[in-house]
Image 1 (cartoon, helix red, strand yellow):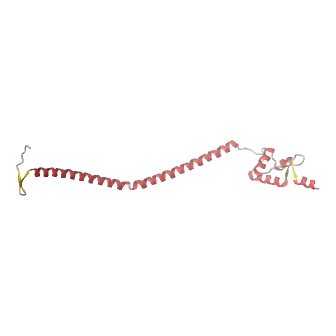
Image 2: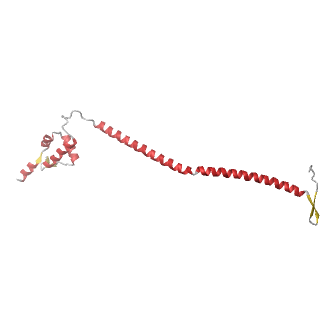
Image 3: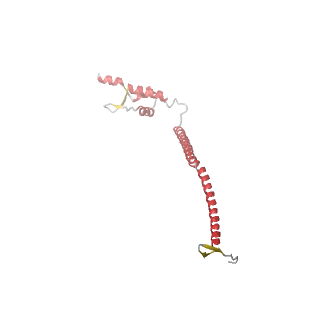
Length: 173
């Protein structure tokens, strides 16, 4: 009686092909998607449970898989793979462009912040250079005045008792 119950609850691969209206290759693909491993009896023959066949049928309906004979225009796998690859490349390019834009914006912002204070520094440097030139000219003028005063001082001769007498300057000296 137990064997009869097992036979009633199991289906052979031929019965599964008829129920799903699919070939062996398609059944194998459905089994892979559903993670179903067909069982083998004592004689080594493959069988499926009713529950497994129900799951395969649901998966077949969900994925739109049907008999290759009834399909009017099969989509080549290479075309869909190329489309997926093309869209992936486009996504990568868009991401790279966004990253480039964000990075260049950040760099420009940092450079602007650094250069913001540079205008003030340049103005201050120009003011300092002008002050330096003014002071340098003042030093030159003071050196000329010192030279003139030393020459004038050299014209006086000590006479004694804290008195000095101015001697005539010789133009030719």
